[in-house]
Length: 291
Ligand SMILES: Nc1ncnc2c1ncn2[C@@H]1O[C@H](COP(=O)(O)OP(=O)(O)OP(=O)(O)O)[C@@H](O)[C@H]1O
Image (cartoon, rainbow, N blue to C red; front, side, top):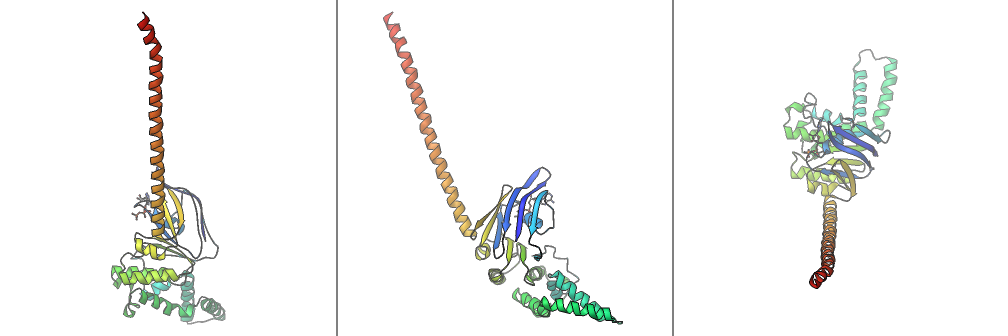
């Protein structure tokens, strides 16, 4: 779970977020929407710890692993594709590296043996033996064919890199998945694959997307960023849109009624004032006629 308490962010004189209080709970997929420049990407960066808020607090359930779709397409240029995906699970990857370094040693000591067996235990617990096949399955699902799995990232086209980085974020069943515009550069078939993946994903997802159809398919809740406030609504995008249209219509009908009443009252006051003025004039007219 992620809990956001009294979060504010200011850039110079501009307040991007003002005293935001929201909670994101496991099992839900939150689709983040808002006008261009409302602060969607910035909000995800605060949640993932990439940038700090001006005030307030973000609390994440201890021990939960967060995976974030990387935006820098060149970060892993010198790394093999399959390895890039596995690197998405930092702890598992660190264990693999340490294990390999020990086995490469020419002078393998008793301590090395003890450490290696500890690492093997942790590796097995994390389902490490399936890491490569899981990573390969994700890549294939995202349209990266097997002959590219052992290529370096720099040899891939831009739209292929995006898919590998997406596989990296999805790898290893993270507790919290943060995705900013994941459908960019994906074809319709791959978007469908991602929709199915997210619908079946049991943990917490927070996703920014301009793709309304995608949000309709995956979102269980809508997070609306508007005028420095953040509100969460249950339901997918269409449900949110129709509810907000209905609410806007109800507000507009209500405003019309209030305006009609105000006009009626104004007319009444004018008529009343005119009558009072007339009645004040009459005795004077009478007095004038006597003289
Ligand atoms: N480091 C920064 N310093 C100053 N202003 C910033 C900084 N980062 C972001 N902003 C501003 O904050 C606002 C929100 O940016 P952000 O990218 O989060 O919006 P967004 O809702 O994701 O927009 P879009 O839909 O266009 O991607 C923008 O006006 C942006 O220029």
